[in-house]
Picture 1: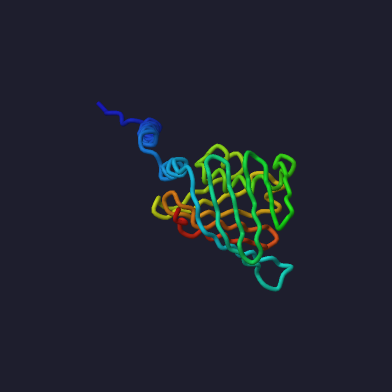
Picture 2: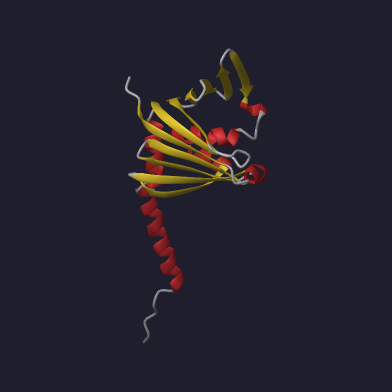
Length: 195
């Protein structure tokens, strides 16, 4: 009498069920990162930014301070080389330079939304918003991680190659935007500003 061995298909199904059970009980490092980011309700840090544009002979450099208040208020106060403030709140971007103020609703500028949303959604730990606009690739551990965001919209992909965000635990350290034409910007985020 011959004993029958279980079919390969049954074995694969059993392994897949065990893997699925393991995934549902143990969150991935990406899920843990999003939970950490979502738990952070505010931040105040310094920044430096370098923009490399093909039409300029040398990079543009600026520095200042950033504020974040969950879930959707971002403020970028540039102090050098010229004072300027950008505030994003409830989908409205306000820019102030000198005595001039400009206000624009992001819904009227759909080409800008993904760039703003990449940072806002990351800080808020909003996976659904990130995945609505980008193919998201996570690499690393909670101690040092990288998100690579590639636009899913063909029009945006024609302008922006990708956005790389690096950090440590719940702190974002760099945001690099690489444009399809070779231009790029690198925002380096410093330590927390004491209260």
